Image 1 (cartoon, rainbow, N blue to C red):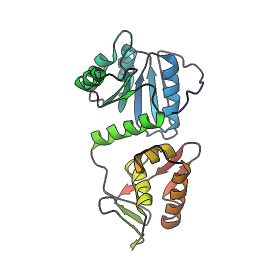
Image 2 (tube, rainbow, N blue to C red):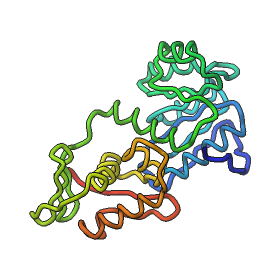
Image 3 (spheres, one colour):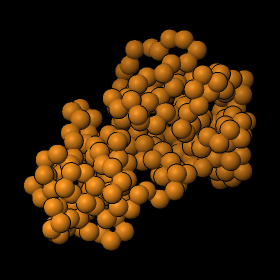
Image 4 (cartoon, rainbow, N blue to C red):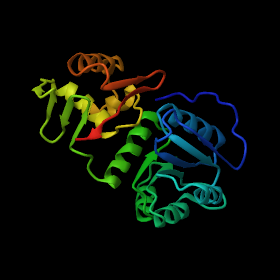
Length: 242
């Protein structure tokens, strides 16, 4: 589990922080516990998200008036407006919601899903797992990614499990293709090594250096310009539909 890092207290009714990639999805975080709120905000920022952090449901709706988020992370137990009522208000606006709960009780899951939540996470949670679930919900909402894309002379066909460079088939191992697919399906966004592991291996029980190794192999086969390194954050791929 990612440890809670000390952060400088955030001031104001709600605070928006920008991720390294300004086009990254905006997460609305509604959490009344200041330590959890500030730490979650920081850890999501480090994983390439933009985050608007609020202390309760009323402030969260005020933040929505300023900028509608792509997705929300909502604590169930909050003052002034609880998480279930906020979830109903957000889903009515078309905003997908992941609920945070301190209790792993079936009634919380049932009530949350009945209120319109797309998923839920029990505290304490791993930041990489939360980030992976955020992307999974957005993928489900947005539908399947473009199945064929290209960058430079490299053409990637996800459905056909085929990669060509300058018209020549490039043989990839299954692991190399899964790493490439994870980056492609989140194109434009910076993925940490832990996020890539969660998507390519369906597990967090891998040495993060395995991602570096496979990225190096992909660069040797596809060229250095296909996968970009964002220092301190992770990897990103920029492609255009073929």
